[in-house]
Image (cartoon, rainbow over all chains, first blue to last red; front, side):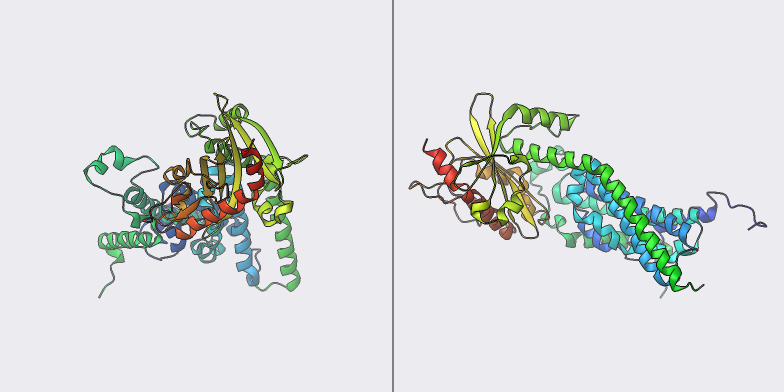
Length: 217
Length: 241
């Protein structure tokens, strides 16, 4: 450590920690993790955004905490320690939402609690934070949560637009006058299976544009 | 590196104590805010069942607005038993309908909220609570002063399917209940049935249910029958005055 110079905060390597999960190693579209919540909370944009923010907060801090403790955590109970850290952070988020964003918390109901079971979070703790220093761990957590979050938000945007005809509860389709010329909301988009198909379309678009993801024959 | 059992025990004990302490401090600090939110949401639901507080989504200080409207329009609250006699010493606002409906009929505390409109007309509001498909459904039913005609209803739910059962909390469904009657011409309590769409609803005791939300619709029907049924004696008593 003494020989090498201190790495700058935003070195190319650190930036990469933040950016690869957004595209090349996206937790949802490439690793196909955390699909469950992507189906459940993406009917409307608002809960999806709140959940994305909540996951960024939980994942960033969980990675930092585990990274701080990484040398003290007994190897045999490390999974339990990770779970306790995640669960406490999720309870914190849930309590804060209930106190200051009551309406949104009512909409999200159980799904805030289900962040605990989001496999992406434990995956990053186990794979990255346990073996890396604090700052890179933080970037890795935020990067992966953001990679998860932006997919959630894109899916929710299309489902709300096509399913309810609104964007963030603003009646876009009505204002455009589409209902007058015979357009109707597609009720299918509200149901969970359509989230799966929307994610599928995103994966398709991503794979056709990103050369690295195209498997060689 | 392999740690001793003692280390593991100490580590996990310390971890549990620290986590418990942090969480309980946070929960205690935030509790007043959370309780205020719940109270405001409840007051708003009561007001909405009699078509008040309709600007709640637009005003800047929603809490103050809801409190003000509640003070202005809700003129009396009290608790009755199944015979319609008043019970003293119980706060109607604090009664939890879910717990009450689990008790036998004779022991239930049944809250009544009285709303008086600007023109002096009175409405009586009753909390309802029942079961939907995935979880509880609940709301408020406001009756006109004949204790028979429904003035308005507000329904909400915990986890009904979006687009299907969850539609019970949409105005289009709630509005179908307006003007429906609880008692038939012979004076028997029949409540309001929520029937499958397509069946032409005869009379004053039927509303169209929601396609794809059959079980939730039935839950609403049962909820109205069970809860308003507990108030039956009270209605009959007041109706004939």
